[in-house]
Length: 268
Image (cartoon, rainbow, N blue to C red; front, side, top):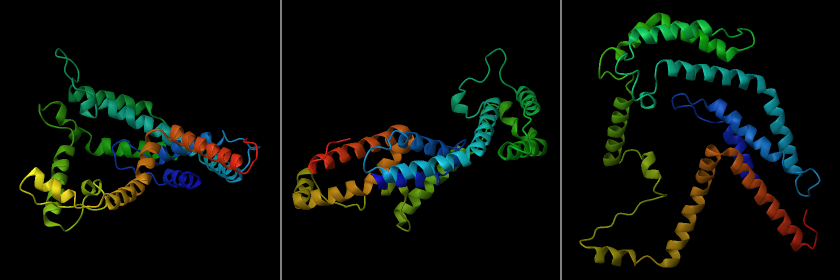
């Protein structure tokens, strides 16, 4: 359990930021907040919790040290989401921009963007993240803002090239699969290795499968489950960090109670 807590803390400071509008540093801070909140539920008088108490103090120290910066990043992220809403982006969230009588136009988006830009006045001395967003936003809007508005006046013109890049990505992965030069992420999801069977009928295929001893199959299945345990833990941690961490704390408490009962001590 303690190893899983260390993994959760280490993952919080190494969150990636490749998705649109997804900021790994902000998500990592929120995950670290959930870890600290879960660790606070461990009472100091409970036995065998010295490590968790020390870890809770370190997590709280890191949270307090970076609280102001996290609030600045959170505010910058909120403004970035407002910019996306002004652009009606992503398109999937706005299936019907405007209405039939007054459809969304480039001129309307331009006015809304300029009004939003006038409202954004961060503190340049105390808010470095908002300052960086402000300067980049103004520079891009001044240099090529008008070139980004054609998709609102030309029917069928997409606002980005993500679908085209996704198509190229699928073609590239397919080429790698058939050439065998590099494994892809999709193939790794199936396990540690793959087996190819050649059979003319289902009966022949079943006969080949039965040649594998059940004990050996179960042993390899167990190894595969153990190899996938860490990925599954991180998946649960990213979806609901507080619930996942509380589950670990509950497992730790149950384990302490079991050890106390085995040694003849009264459980906490």
